[in-house]
Image (cartoon, rainbow over all chains, first blue to last red; front, side, top):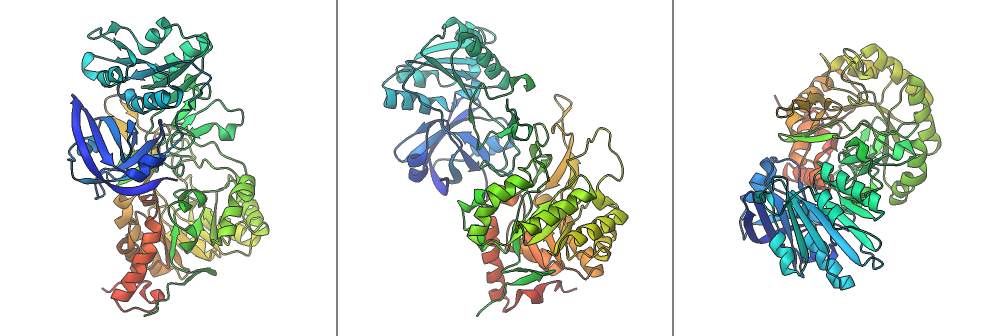
Amino acid sequence: MPWIADCPITSHQEVAPGHCRMVIHAPQIAKDAQAGQFCMLQVQEGLYPFLRRPMSVERIFADGLSFLYKIVGEGTRLLSRMTQGETINVQGPLGKPFPIDPSFDRHILVAGGIGIAPFPALADAIKRTLGKTPEVIIAARTEQALVGNRDFRQMGCKVHLATDDGSAGKKAFASEMLEKLRPGPGTVVYACGPMPMMKATHAVCEAAGVPCFTSLEAEMACGDGVCLGCAVEANVEIESERMVRVCKDGPVFDSKLIHWESY
Amino acid sequence: MSINLQVNVGGLVMKNPVTVGSGTFGYGQEYDQYFDVAQLGAVTVKSLSLKPRTGNKPPRLVETPAGMLNAIGLQNVGLDAYLRDKLPFLRQKGCTIIGNIYGHSMEEYMELAKRLEAEQGADAIEANLSCPNVHDARTARGCKLVAQSPERVKEYTQAIKTSTKLPVFIKLTPNVMDIVEPALAAEEGGADGISMINTLLGMGINPETRKPILSNIVGGLSGPAIRPIAVKMVWDVAKYVKIPIIGMGGICNADDAMQFILAGATAVAVGCYSFRQPDAASKVIQGLEEYCIRHEITDINKLIGAMMV
């Protein structure tokens, strides 16, 4: 069950240009949260911004959570101004977590830009529950937009970097990097990033015959399945069930379910 | 001091004047995890159509200053699934239910009303004659919503009234020259109440891509941004019709709700603010009681239309 609580901000820092990490004290939410879930953050008390902002849970601690986000608009810009010691109203945890299946022995996490956000918690969970260390592909447009690679190295993960312009790591797309890693039997892929990147990653996984779980992003009003504003098209026979809610049916979906042709 | 919050909306007894806007509260169960939804004067369910509806393609939603623009397109489970999967929860909780209905024709509205009554799926009917998001904005122009034509409002109201003994409320659109005209038409057609207002038509364009923000191009604007318009329209209509009004449009708290009541609404609905604060409607009930205590009013009915000029 999701909680709604005023949570003290215990740390809030810019970790890369235009990217921030917020840590909150939220023992109840932390107790229930699983990797892949998200929270709805109320940026200010007034009516602007009107809606909460959905944020992936980056890491889960004993007494709180962290969020890693990119400043993309007014809401995140205002959010970035909040400081340690202030409180923020947080609703969560929400949505479906990443499935963690012991029958796989190779886990590849594919992140595009700020799509890295939910993966530290996933890497933690894979290590904790399966005793395995995932490999991570971090791709971004440029070196400046690469965030989080140091955190994964500290966790002992093998990190593969790629940029569109070759300014850091290989000059390649995330999906091309994945192809080079030759995913095969026993591999499971988790992807989060822009839709075209996840679409390409899904295609690589299909060709390799390995399962892929994608974490989607969408504009949301309620975050809890009511408004139907975040729906995306799915491969469902019954027409009336074709629109699935990113917030409630996701944000993590088996990539086979998503109707990628629409994106 | 004991306060009476009970109101009677055209035959529907509500233990307090607070309901929720159709489409902002699902079928009740979703928000029951945040507060006991049986506290509400009534739960107004998401528009029900005879057949399930897929709704519009994404993007369907965008935030706006003090509000939001949506073009969901009445995605809903359909009447059969509602009766089978959603209704038992609401009945078991003891909720008073306003069944919002949407049809493609007068006959469909009649069928929906008839079946909701027969299967005890609602305690009152709210006919959505005013959803702005089910027409193609590229081609449709002019009078396309039933609620934009007083003649059709009257005709539809009469037809729905012949199909059910339940109280019938007509939900009106603000996208008209003079909302009093369809309101009077609903009253003449025998409506037991008027729900107002539905969303205001609006749109947004991304200047970078030069593309519309919503896939449907046009959507409905809701939230506190539209509240002054809604209060004014309720005041306009209350002067001319005798049937009760369920007022809505950007209600966030009890003060907002009081504006509608003072303007002439018998009941109020909390709409998209529930998305931000799931227990907002519960807080409004509490706040209305506190308002009455503070103003030494023992019966909230005395405040309906009690604006002092």
